[in-house]
Image (cartoon, rainbow, N blue to C red; front, side, top):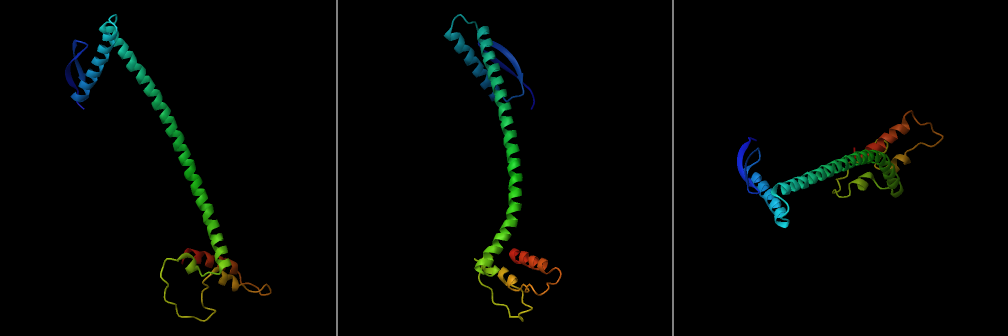
Length: 178
């Protein structure tokens, strides 16, 4: 902003000041300062206008130091809050990641206990779809975790390589809705 020259009167003393503030801001400051000096001189006749001006300047300097200290304290608080927020976000991410594993395990247990088809466990609000044509029992994909476990071979039978891993992938796929 461009600097302007103002003619003002403070404590009955005419002076010219240069400021980059708007005129209304400068006039408000001049009025405030003039009022404070006049208040001091009217309360005590022993104070000259120069003495009063010095007291007002000291008061403003004191207020500025207090404000600067408060700003530093607030900045330190903000830094602390920011560090806590960062830590909580990291903790939230860790909890979400750990809960995702537990949620899939818990969902499997609930579905297995209640023997619910996955569609009804995860898509309660959707309208039921038309039944798909029935394929032969061996080619049909299992609809629930309980069906997957029902298809497990007897302990006497040898399971093909990757059989458990395939079942786990099927369970994850069913839980994700794929």
